[in-house]
Amino acid sequence: MRHQLTWKSSGILLLGLALSGAACSDDDDDTENTGDVPTDASELFTFLSADNYRSFAAETEVHSPNGNSPHKDVRVFVNSILEDSLKAGNSEHPVGSASVKELYEADKTTLMGWAVMVKTNAQSNGGQGWYWYEIFSTTDGSNPDFDGNGLVACIGCHATGGTDFFRTPYPLE
Ligand code: HEC
Image: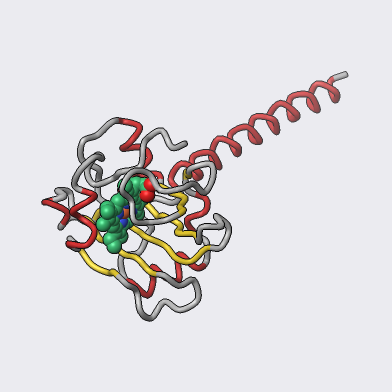
């Protein structure tokens, strides 16, 4: 009898350990994918071609562009820093906020490149505080079409109609 009781209590102890283990891995999930989108063009291309952004929060499917977007058929991903900030309704997103936009052919299945924005400064300062990148290749990262902070080709449109240069409607659809 005494022996059985011991077994029972060690079972409860093990259950407790298993539960605290599960709680730990939940915490890990929360901190993953934050501030981790590179702003060096060649590191960023490696990051993109390894599909590292695919675990980010995303629109459910590839869709036609909204409004006056030049980006063709697209699917937008946001990292957890940006997602938390969007959720909080912030008017300025924190450093490390990042969005990756997959660019598709009109068939909605052939990936042809990416557009990326990463917040590098606490203040957006007219778009200077965001790093902008765009490439129309999925195999050769040596010649991105756009790469740098405050690019005129990007900030004109992004300054209007969104929140702190982010234009996709939130919650993501
Ligand atoms: C003619 C206007 C226009 C220009 C120029 C433009 N964008 Fe966009 N962009 C949009 C719109 C509108 C969206 C919203 C989603 C869509 O495409 O349907 C968007 C979405 C994005 C997104 C997804 C996050 C978000 O803001 O919604 C990224 C990343 C992005 N653009 C990067 C760029 C980069 C990099 C450049 C410059 C090379 C650029 N864009 C130039 C209009 C523009």
